[in-house]
Length: 188
Image 1 (tube, rainbow, N blue to C red):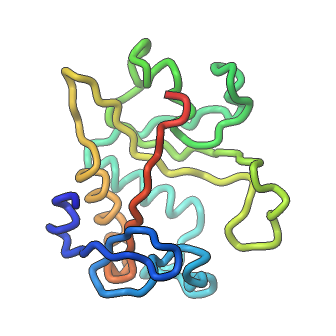
Image 2 (tube, helix red, strand yellow; image 1 turned 90 degrees about the vertical axis):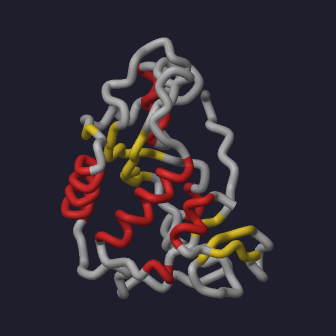
Image 3 (cartoon, one colour; image 1 turned 60 degrees about the vertical axis):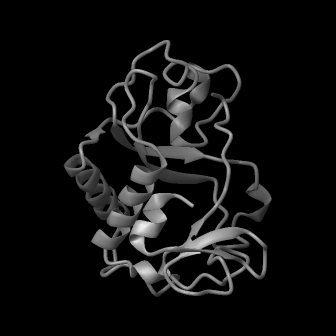
């Protein structure tokens, strides 16, 4: 278990529905993610006030700026301009692959913040049928490019920043769950 979970009062648990490992400050039977739990925020925001897209982006940007991240402009959504393995930006990290993540080019800032429009078409048949499928979304990203001679932060600080941001917009920390998952870095 990461030390940050212990510091924040989170306990390791196993979801009785999907079997995934997750962390929560309170005892729960399920991990909080769909399909194990119904969406409880639709029409009932978890935040202390409703935010429109521009307000939440500005709040996110300012929070991370105060935490030492330099805001950068978003990239185009057509990744084909700098990558030959994908056509569209599917996540903010796509903007930095392979040139920056490989170390060939320096990042525009480090650490940085970007609100990156992203397009995913892998589940387009489900768009309109559920509340979780869409083709375009904005990914709010706090990104660091660690190098052997310049380590900035990793898991503990990433989780702390997420936790502090959620608290800053009024989300009850007892409602926050962190689900253990592995990401292989696609394209790195």
